[in-house]
Image (cartoon, rainbow, N blue to C red; front, side, top):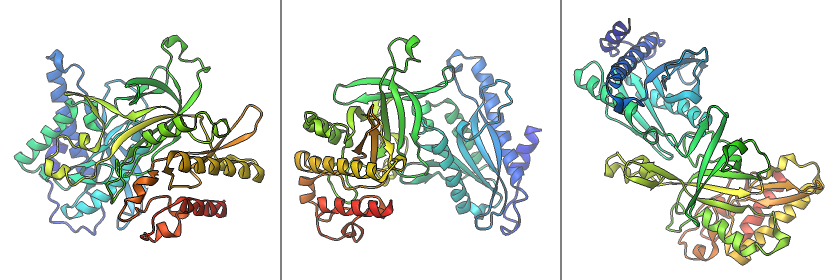
Length: 462
């Protein structure tokens, strides 16, 4: 039966049909893809059985998930197709996006390639949302008999040349690709080996490399406070966690203090300029400069550890960047993709969003705390925050129930001295709260007054 589905797909003729007609042949293409993936998986599994070197090789399979959509002309029941890892175990659990290795967008006509790209981007967003250990994502489009592999970096999508499975050369290249995905390291598939799920204890373990001490600390995640919900961008995730005890028997001990782990893909320089940005370095300076000022304790995130994520590759340990993701891509193509660096930061205390405040009086208190911290950081550390928003003002409570405001997220911060040398101030911040000069991208340099103006918009927003 599998072979018959594969043959039907190979012999499928899409050019003779009208793209405006309903997608009646897409299930046939989906079955053909499943047949080819299953065939390759079975062949590799038989090879692995005879060779201990391949005993840990993954096996890819497909699953489908129905979804009703209505975009452009796609107003019908769409079946999402995904490649997943076949564990070989019998289970009644239906795979979902959290289990998918990559998504597959199927269209019956070769002329529908751009619609396939759009739908693949829509489906791939769900991988980033449901998989905390997802660094980047692969995907496939199948339009008729034409297959393309797509790599979703954080700013661009790269697409391969067409693989036409109706030809022997096209099938050979596609089989080679499936074989590589089956045998490659997990980090090449888009997974983060420094974020691991413990199925027995049912929690995530997160490694954080500290660039100051050059030591790696492990943490146990208790809650995912903030998750990414987009296909592109910084993909910021925030985890509430506790440091992992040296004794595994103490893993359930909740006496370890809670910390917040921020994981993000940031631009190493301000867009449109050559000014470097390093949130870890900024938080370290703030901590060292303000540590002895007890009046400011708790009004800014205290850095516990942080640095670039370290990935164990075949050539050793490497900093996780966009260039590492694209390491196997042609150099001229890599040069066209903006480089981001993967940072992970451990901070305390763990704050709450301001919509959890109980009264206007508490709001007044935390706004005063936040702007006191902002002023001290600007004057004593020479740093301008540049992104005051409702999401970057948080609070925490003391043992008596009192509140303390906290200014967080220094992703867009910049040294005031560096801003003096900018030919054109860059436009950064959260849109509803940006100053007028920032919105208009004026040539006037940004100052603390721009952040104070943002505060006014925040109060109006609330």
